[in-house]
Length: 112
Length: 113
Image (cartoon, rainbow over all chains, first blue to last red; front, side):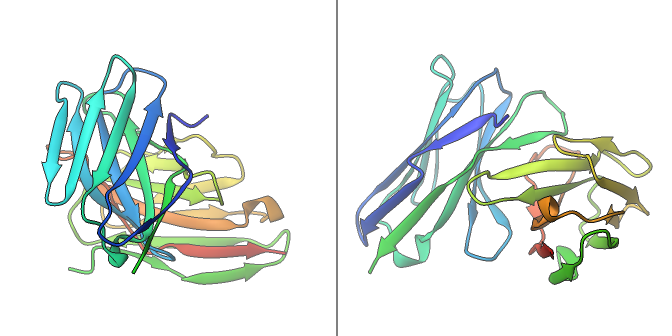
């Protein structure tokens, strides 16, 4: 079964608006990662947040983590058409562990 | 650096045929992974290799075998392809030290008729 589940499944916004995607997971984790996948391509790592962190920023990306609610959110500010992609959260349970479990993803469409 | 490369990009098989998907990385990473991606289901781990000489089953290993040929290469074999194995297959690699970021190849689209 999937560890991470993204919400919403699909999101359509206008260029310049903010996009928020949520991820919920079931068991305790060591870290949570967000990846982007452009159509027909492999996944690209965006940002990693550890279980002892609550918020992290990278450029126009802001990630929050609430371990008490077992949830994370990814905010993309001032979205661009080039942000159109699928976004996946991925969780790793153990320090140094080898398995990362991916959610089903949120498809984001940014209209120019 | 080419990163993670996969061959072939696209393949059509008939039920019962066999094939091997090839993956290579030039980043000197220790760990390598094979995933399959089906519509609406994200990525599911098939097999992984934590380091050269070791392989372990993931979430959906049935119908597949793997070989970690050397540190660079990790192949996935379908011995007798079934329509349920129609999917997009991704290979990924990761270093053991520090970062847990995985680096993905471009994928292989497999259609089993």
